[in-house]
Image (cartoon, helix red, strand yellow):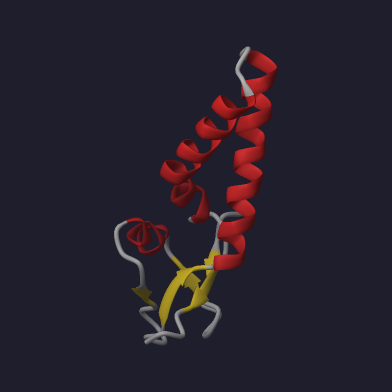
Length: 96
């Protein structure tokens, strides 16, 4: 279910390699030696969906103003989004 593949050589990437992306911007595929990074499109979608979920949760269970809800969603998204991005496909780093 959580298997992810290199977009170039289509071989499976292990969990440890994807976890390295939390500390490094680019990791190298051990089979085809291409640089891999988080997919920017998925990052944008994840950020919006995550912010919306946090916002709805805060409005539903807490009596907060709209500014407070937006602030909580943005700050939590900034800190936790990279952990969510590990679960989605990677893309080849074209800047190398």
